[in-house]
Length: 260
Image 1 (cartoon, rainbow, N blue to C red):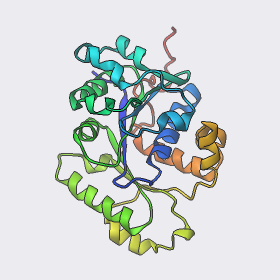
Image 2: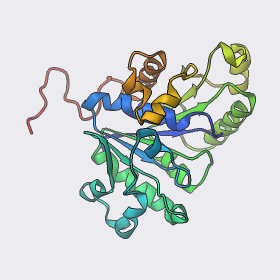
Image 3: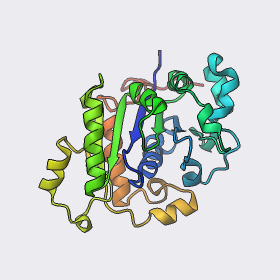
């Protein structure tokens, strides 16, 4: 039985900062090695996770195709690109046409195996519904929906929520995050609530340091852990943790970790 938790990050409109949220969330959950984390870049056509983390994509999900039916915790290790010890990435394909070769059955199989290896699997998705995205939403322990405080993005979020409500998903395992949410957006809170019509889990202020952190290949949560955005991401991370605040692999309070 899987031990790790799957967090699927989705935005119905491009440009909302979804990948930035996903990479920083994975960084916070990794917690400097306290947890084993896998960031899965499911944006198969235009995945940005490698660029965000300054990684060279020598392996990708397409390398899982020859043994798709025999994936095990041991075989998935060969697919990974390591960002930090205990923080691995399963990157999107880079060759033209490879994205179309990835079936939803492979995504489902990967998401069945990865939680056996990692405490947290953060899935960064494309900004469109499809079989692969639905597989990631189906298997998620928690869904994070990212938007920005502009009417087109909020309209798309409202449509997304209506679609998700038609599916058998637990509404309590869903968090809405408004990125770049501050006075500069000039959108009154009451109007925002009226447009979304669902509880908002977090507001992330404008990320002034993001371009520089992306160019360095270092998430803001790692470079500036005391930044107000990093603190907001930590608050978001708390919403995806188990109710006791511990990862499933952590021992009960007062019990020591088994020796290795």
